[in-house]
Image (cartoon, rainbow, N blue to C red):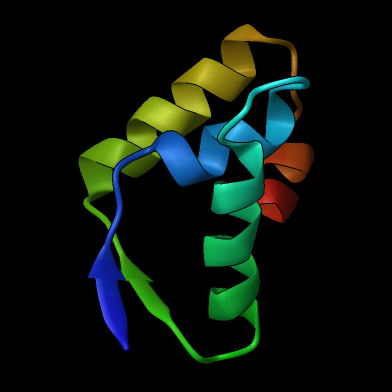
Length: 66
């Protein structure tokens, strides 16, 4: 199965208390298990890196998250 994602699944798991975080975890777990392929644009990746950097994450932490 394949899906296209914006930045939300990559942000939500890191926002405590967000009611949609569980849905994002399911999507990411399915991708980790190889049952789902997630496609996104390089612009979305740039947005994520910029957001995480502005919150003080290191490049190594961002790579691990993504």
